[in-house]
Structures are given as C-alpha cells and as structure tokens.
Image (cartoon, rainbow, N blue to C red; front, side):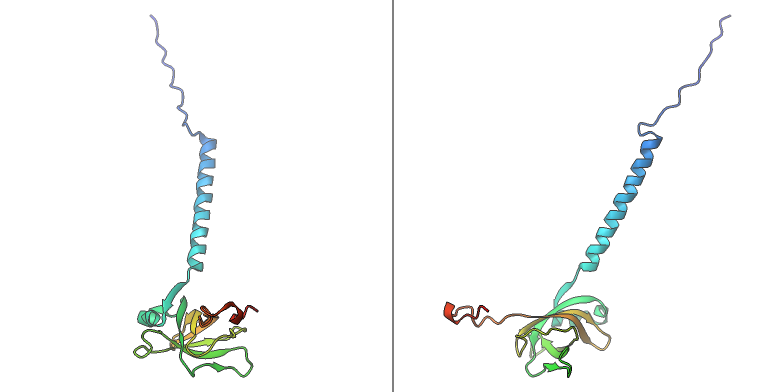
Length: 158
C-alpha cells in the first residue's frame, strides 16, 4: 500500500520579515520622538498678544504665563530706577483708557527704549504676577508717526 506522506507546510514568512520589522519599529519611534520635540518647542515659543483689557479679563488664569501686552503709556506714570536699569509705568487700552484699569508694568532688563514717553504705544513681553503687576523681560515702544507726512528734509534718518 502506498503511504501518503504529508509534509509540514513551510513556515509562512511575513512580507516584512523579522529584520525589517525591527527597522520599521525603530524608525517609528524616532519619528514620534522628533514630532514630540517639535510640538514642545512650538508650544514653548508661543506667546499670546493681548491688549490690557484682554489680559485683565483672563483674571488669575493669566498668572505666570508668558504674554505680550499692548497699551498706551499713561501720562505721568513713567518712573526710572535710581540705577537707570529699570522702569515702572502704567499702560492702558488706548480706546478704553477712561473706563479700563491701567496695568502696572515693571521692567528690569537693561536698555530702555529712548522714545518711551507719555501716550506712546508700548508692547511688553513677560508674566503677570499674583499682585497684578506685569513683570516684563522685554519692552518695545512704537515709534510715533508724527513724521510720516513730513517732507524728506525734516526726517531724521540717523
């Protein structure tokens, strides 16, 4: 009698193979790590730009977060430190200066813009503390536009 010998089926190989699977998993881990680092870098560099009223409307939730705040310098509030390296002033929304509460700003970062003065638009970057004082690590003053329409000989290009 003839005996029928059944051979065991050949082990099926994955189309990816064992060695290729390791490279795919390692590559996936690397891609995920790079994506995570990029996401964290973008979130850390994001700074929200707000007006004084918008910042104050956030209330205590705005404390210890990095913001850029824009407002006009309240006349007569600019005070310079004795050492000349810091300033303290109030800014308010230009359109709602009479109805909004001014924001107290302290800056101890060194160079103070030369054009800073009454009613000049200020952009301060920093954090709001628990007492409601905005501690700025960078202060910018918008150049007044009084020379926009002046003849070329009256512009100061230096």
